[in-house]
Image (cartoon, rainbow over all chains, first blue to last red; front, top):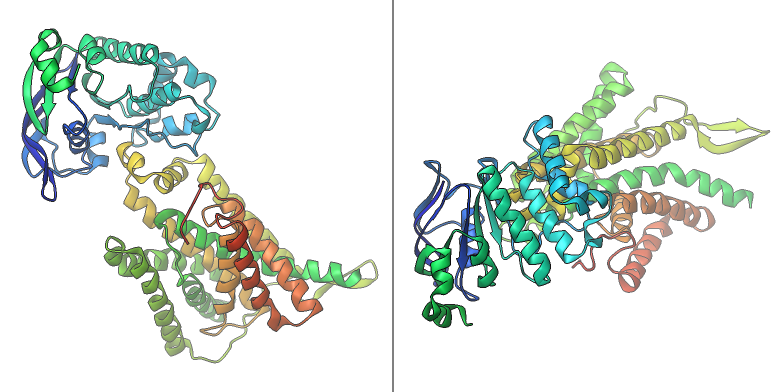
Length: 234
Length: 292
């Protein structure tokens, strides 16, 4: 389990995260929701090692990961799919996938590759095409596929719905939820689209201006009208 | 017409060496987004080392291998000595620092080997081949230069397109953050890029030495030509570096043949200026824009 304890991060004088504590258990999706500027992406980038925390710590199965380098964190089994469908447009679809988990054994990588192609058949059809020829939804699948190639136990998904059609968002997120359920993956999902996120998540965390204002079962948060009006704006 | 063909044929060997130096510049650009002006200095230094090896053993292949090894090491040394300390603060500082390395290498070579031009004996004949009743401006040595260059370019292409190391290096160049998130040790890839560039430049130096002479400053003009080829090729394209490296060699040969050799650098700079005016991203560039 991924355990975030009293995490604070600041950019110069701006405090982006304040004393944030979240538990991300295996086998389910934990959704972090909140408006723009709530600190959601900062949280994800800090977990992945791209930002250094000011205080607090993150542990994974009892081992401290906060403050380590991104390439070491991903090797421990924590993979981030960053915001904005971050694939490498100049590389082919298959090269984008092969980039993930290059340190793993040949057999492990081949197994992951065929699993990704089963999960996302469209990537298999387009494997020799450049990534920039893919549609937005396909590119998001590719970004998730590359993260899966690292053989993760924790999947961090930053704003996967950004710029995608609602139907595709639902498809992708349901697939992620099923994956968490089937293979015991711990998923931390950051979303502005609270409705969809809370529908597939088991528990939810509401972030506002860098602070946790509410956490609990997803259904409870989804039905809390006051909370919705105050922090989620709908 | 006979002249034209002779000038073209005569330009290929120079073009091959310019292509190798341009490749070295491109590999450094791809890994750290900067131009290493010390590249020809490194090549000059490793060529002197090759000269020493050849003079004491008489073995050209051994001299070439030692130069490549020395080029790898020198590439890593320059990366750690100069680039690493200044890289995080600003790239301009690092680029200027590479000029410092160039001057230091030239001074160092002068102290070790002296400033007088020395000849490098070619392993095979440097005389024009006779064929179909006339002597052509192509020697056995020219053919050796083409073969070694082609082998190196093919080897590098396979390395970059077919191996995991190559994929890691390309990904680190295109998007370091995504590469790191995928588990690639990007910093090691940057160093590897500098090392391979050093070895590539070293081969270029050893190949050109027998047809010119070697002195601490004798490769300076090569920097002008290689830089022109690399920039016109788009600075991040290996194909561009090779294509325009050979192209630059041909143009230089034609200009030198029809007018005077001293006009060649001017023509190269005019080509460079035209390129920056008309197609500043280069012909083979991957990216939409870049700052020069």
